[in-house]
Length: 445
Image (cartoon, one colour):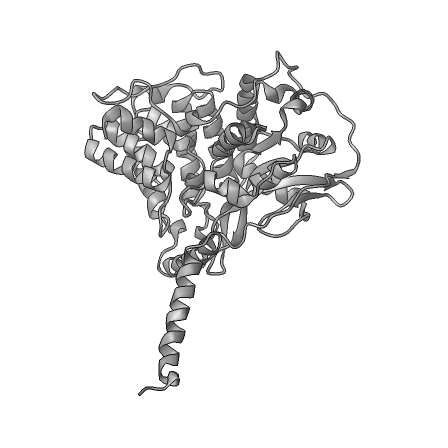
């Protein structure tokens, strides 16, 4: 007969296994466990690969279609389109087109901002701070949750995360996706603009409208090195005497203070993009504060002028890269795709001159302007090469936008099997992704 002691160790290990299985199947515990595993995988990847070492050299910059000869101008009205392929949708879907429209602009706003008296300091009270840590890459869901709960929304980062990141390992959430979620799921409204100014942000804060901004910052990788990456902040206050912004930083802590100069340098890498969440009953108050920013035409032209000024003032290759990238995006928003493509060509040339450790290689994860510009200028191979670069820049390339645009370029070139594979991958990463669903339906994939 065996004693109870002989059965002890096996039973103990069985219980441990059962415990691990239970933990791994419970959310958010499952997400926390996955985050730790992902960190280890990324650490191993960075030991033998550094994404910043790869560069993009447009292969069609000098052989682009006649559309690419359109003059670079903010007033362009021409919309270049590629020659249709037999099964190409007559109305090419774009990820940006799937969002719920932003708030309706107020009638004919004044062309300039109205001067507004501002106190030397102000801080919005009542924002419920949340950290992004513990769940992998949860910056966007966390910041959007903070922007929403301030107005009384009942939820937290796990609620926003289920919608914004239906696939846990999705590496990027676009502001347009945040807008869509707010307006379709929460009962609140939101407006997204670029070319924000310090004065405008202060004006909004003084009137108790928290401002969610998108910026680029050098932060620690899992291997301990500093690397440029996109980040969101909820700006909730300022102090002119100390020259500091007060932000709810999901990566650091609540009421995190950031020097005016530092935030200006970080914010400019996304052309000073800002998003305001608000209740419908306060729309007229918000529009009064935003002034001309409520008019889409004015906002797009202003964004171009804002970026063009950056180009003129840039000194280093790094500054020139961000400025030219911002100008390219602005031209795309003005439907000058060929002009945008030319600006992106210049931007990538500057990128290649930046030191490897400072290269913002994640930029093409976050912003799809180059894909739009090259695609609508008929430069399909450049779309494919840029998507290839984005996909190769990470151990786990969960970048649905890159797969979508590579599929669109392959469709235009008649490579239907390749396009089908990319659309399938896109929908695996982001189930229900509107643009990919449209391509799938229109092409019988």
